[in-house]
Length: 217
View 1: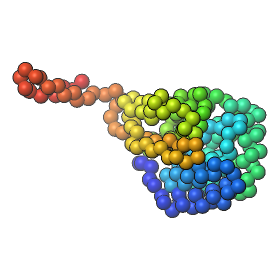
View 2 (view 1 turned 180 degrees about the horizontal axis):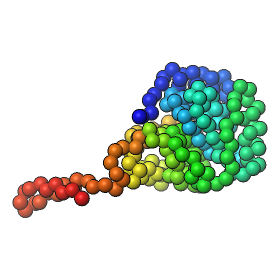
View 3 (view 1 turned 90 degrees about the horizontal axis):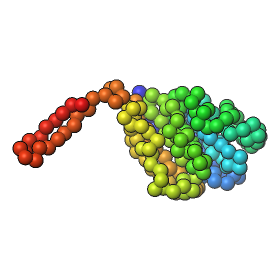
View 4 (view 1 turned 90 degrees about the vertical axis):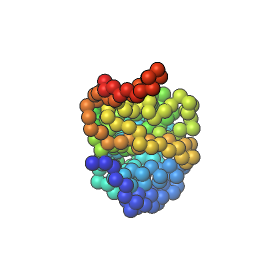
């Protein structure tokens, strides 16, 4: 089973987020992310949040969760951040507070299985490791990197956080959108058949004989 796109859910989540975030800064990011999460019918949405971060994206994801009926988790670094986060989200009428998990994102991620929509702020020093440690759903997932303009593009590639050989997944497509301070997104495939690290076909062309040899290793 693969992720399936629903335009109707995406548009509803987008419009609801517009209503809730119209007075917040960077609401364009929130609206787009909400539409993406709802459109993909994400059943397990995870995000990371640190002190001082924009709250609009969380509101958008909470609205998306209300449309998909899934689970929404926010990972914060400490109790104070969790308290401030809960207060900020709670001040928005009609938005349900997500589950708040406290701890280092990489460690918390180890206990979250089946993620199909993950949002991480690239201003975190460990943002690429957070993506790498995510345990995605068997049907695939969408990875979203916020504030992508703040990082050096040459030092980050989506394929560096998806081990295509051992996980039996691949990066289906990526897109960079100039929304807010930059959104970099990747769609990761469902788990494919075959055993990780299994045998593969290797082609070798013999220049002397002009023959093509196909070897299975």
